[in-house]
Length: 70
Image 1 (spheres, rainbow, N blue to C red):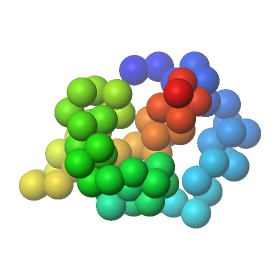
Image 2: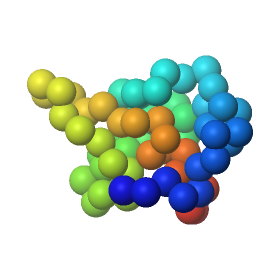
Image 3: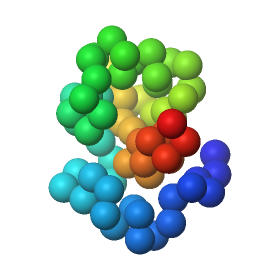
């Protein structure tokens, strides 16, 4: 997945208080959305995530890309 909408300056400004890889709970706080909507975005592929054990990890750049496209 390309991140054409995410420049280094945007990356350094948006969600700077969050780590480069976030959890579903952090995704909820970042976007002010429910847990259910978080999983819907992940399962539909709108936000890329990968599984570590039983939980998802989401690259922050993918959250920023989603926001920029929305």
